[in-house]
Image 1 (cartoon, rainbow, N blue to C red):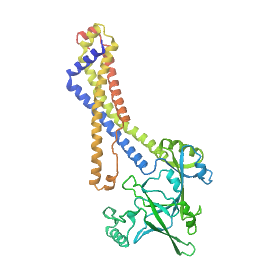
Image 2: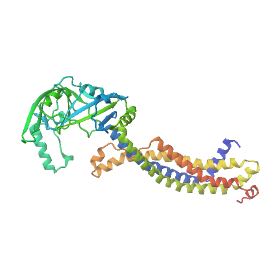
Image 3: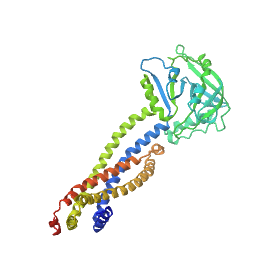
Image 4: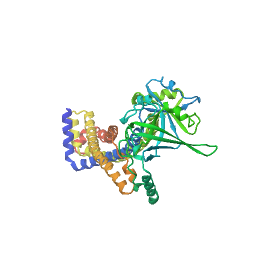
Amino acid sequence: MRFKDQVDFIRRNMKKNRLRVFMTVLATTMACAFLIVLSSVGFGIQKTITDMTMSQQIVTKISVYGKDDGKAVKKSDLEKFKHAKAVVERTEVHEPVKAKLNNRTNENMSLTLTNMSDELKSNMELDKGRVAKSENEIVVGYDFAKYLWTEKESKDFEKQINENNGNNAELKEPKGYTKDILNQTIELNVSKVDEKTGKTSEKTYDFKVVGITKKPKNDWMEDSSVFISDAFKGEFAKFLDLSKDSESIQKSVSVYADKFDNVEQLTNDLTDAGYNVMSVTTQLQGVNTFFMVFKIGLIFVGCIAVIISAIGIFNTMTMAVTERTQEIGIMKAIGANPSIIRRMFLMESAYIGILGSVIGIIISYGVSYIVNLAVPVILESTGAGAAGELDYTFSYIPLSLVIIATVISAGVAVISGLNPARKATKTNVLTALRREL
């Protein structure tokens, strides 16, 4: 019996009981769709966290926090590692700092001393201008000008805070300095408090803005930093204590890989050498482990629905064997191999499982699309505005999930048809011809 004839035989017999087959396929479709949609929540949450982690920092950056033996971290040692493109040492000043431009002042800023050539190697992205090349040149964050307020704007904003009782959603920040800040001369005022006398002393430095960093990837992130060449450390050291144990500063060292594909290898090499490091790969490792267990749990729950649908397939195939008793007897009487008869019934149950899976996959993508559109609107309408503004993926269906769901649904369908198929091959010819089973 040719394969084409077997397929035609299956299709003809399925058409005889369209309603029963339709209901069985519908049960399989619902089970497969439930499995995919339920599991897609786990994939969606993992994708959201992964995307947020990747967008909040430079993916090639590896932060170095020290060595296991307590020795100082040397830049020259880190530069020797394979795939290390740049090593950046930053010194962040924690004393009160103000930036002034004419009658405007920015007190919402951070001051960082760094090697500009190393920053260039690490691909510091600029929106305008260039990196600083001399001591009295600086690079400012994208939102630095936004926080250059006049005294009146500062008082009006403070008044809003007092009147709104901490409801930040209704606050309207001043527009700040709206002109181009590039090539403007900024006056930096640095203060320090003498721990013995309690007196505050100040010193002012003039810098020219030669570069502006790129806008942060997320709308809710802001950058009001000021980057000064570490060639200016000598001047700062005359006023501030820049020693290693000083509370006025915080030093950090970062290694930048030549490309993202080598971040994991470089991270492992640094760890093996006794360095305490943190990178995107180490952050995502724990996240991926947790979500692997979480997704397996969701798939297991979804499999329960698939198993329930298997009962329907079992009943359908059992009825099919009973109804086709005479046809089975005739096939065996003319010499049909029992394996062919078994194969036809297994193909029929597999057809039901695969057809239900395909329809279930299509429905799942539709449900996933609607969920990703509707949930943010629901969150916003219920007052969770902050959550609604974030770029969440509530349901995500990767190709791997589609393959897993199809294999499970089709596999369970075939297993459900094993016993009826085996029963068909054991049918006695004479009994079958008398329409008795």
